[in-house]
Image (cartoon, rainbow, N blue to C red; front, side):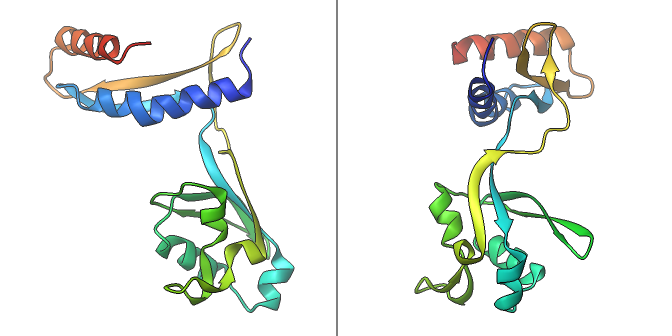
Length: 167
């Protein structure tokens, strides 16, 4: 039986290597990864701290978005309204996310940092389903063909690309 770390690693490889390679196969319209655990940076905001600092959720979302980093969070609830925070880009560590400047001089890296008002950690995205047989969980992909493509030709090309990628 494989552990949660194994399935997370397999999903990471699927997302970073396999999906990209399969999307380049002639005749493939879409590759939709399924199963596994998607890694994300989770931001747990301290509502007392943001209120003390006069920060709104909109200001926080704007700062994270403008930072140009791939920052995902579960959800933030304020006054009964649940909000997801996500920015798209590149992040190398939890510290990169913690050092996002919310208010102050972003060029000098001085001011109120996200880490001052929130706890940031690497975790698994909220799961909406899984891919499993009767014994264990798996990762995989659903491949869509382009209109008027020959399925046999595309399937052969996909199998060859997977063989080229190796184990």
